[in-house]
Length: 255
Ligand code: 13P
Image (cartoon, rainbow, N blue to C red; front, side, top):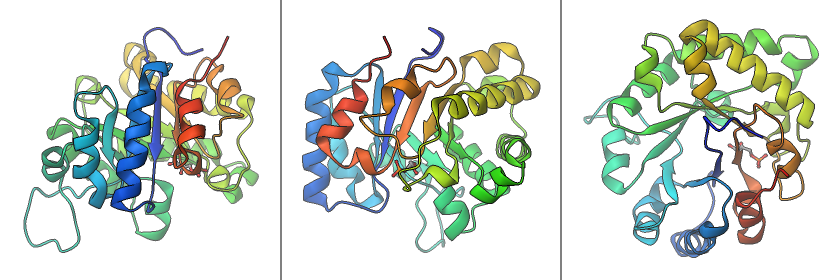
């Protein structure tokens, strides 16, 4: 179980799924079920659904997030969405540097770092994603990858600036594959991440940062993952799209 310093967070990442009507319906179910949640709950929804979902979640404790942002405030950046726009539409959070964005849309540690600055300036809680590919794991590069992504993504801030930051460890080989990291593998990586955060920003900071696990989290495996001392929550893809599975994950039990 996570330290009492860190409130567990279960965040759904809906990715590029759901129509407006479906988004509203699922958001309503999450809102109705949040009283039974074991920690904090969030949904990170497609841009087109943000405003409608914000309306549904109004007055509830469910947090709302975008799945990416651009670092400029406004201007001629066709197709992009600023952090101010996310706040305006009702978001409190934003996912940054998801591996799908790194792989398919050229996000790098440098652009993640710029997006992070913009997110923090706008008062958003950033969920910064890191994680190794299968090839990197098999060639013993996991720790180097995590170290580089953390140092690059978070560089140039003081610990106080980063107090809201959430890290999501998402091994790429576990995303959408049904191949979850074992609880021991997740714990080992989370402990390493916390150690790196301590090197970068000190012990007090590292002890307070929430590190989520992502990659094929389901209603069946959430409890054993959440029982690990350095797993402070989950970033959930596929299983967040179904009401029953997400509600069960929100209500994880570690005892
Ligand atoms: P899955 O839960 O579908 O494996 O996706 C994980 C993920 O990428 C969350 O951001």
